[in-house]
Length: 288
Image 1 (cartoon, rainbow, N blue to C red):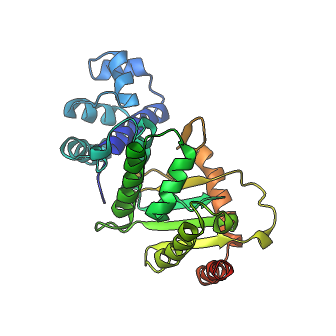
Image 2: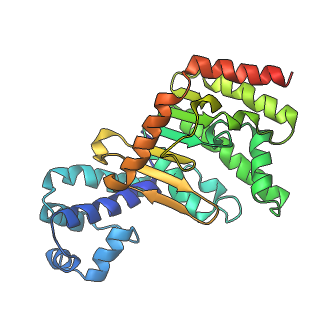
């Protein structure tokens, strides 16, 4: 499993909050247990500061999770010794702050699932297609900064789908994504051909939701589901939603469950991989 200090620190913070609340313990009581301040406990729980090893061990035992001390300490150690893979892209123009957390969370996942309504997802985009999407979304961005964003997207492909990692990636695309021509016909055709190539990878499954499936009730817009290795004990994982105004992370099981149910419905009506490939080929023939 790859390591992201950004994601590890956030996960430790989230778990400390969850474990404390599950145990019915207040921040004041937790502060007293480590002979610290309520403010410090707040810093721990938002990821602003990491607990020292003894503080971390004391809190976990106080919360009734003493059996997980060694695991948490190992994560703390890894977060201090590792570096996020995207560090060389770290500029406001190429890498907005909100995206750093997403890249970290994705790096830690061992299963990535996505539903897209109009676009080919970033993990499978060609350079030219990604450039067209970035240009359309940020038309005033300088060429240099736009190219850095596209480079970041290509690096993300290598990190998630290559480089020795093998997360299970399952993408469902609306048939509309096959027909919207982005960047010109040549770019569009090359992108559809790339989808066929990606679908040959053993850890990748790209399936198409055909127009014939009818109205998709209970499914609003695009989203991603990120599931973590079992040792993280993160139940349903994270649901990620991005819109023009903000990005949202849902991690409480009750909040993630509707997204899981929606994805399962989409999976049940999407074409099988082989049939999806046939549909992509038919669309390609239309553009021949």
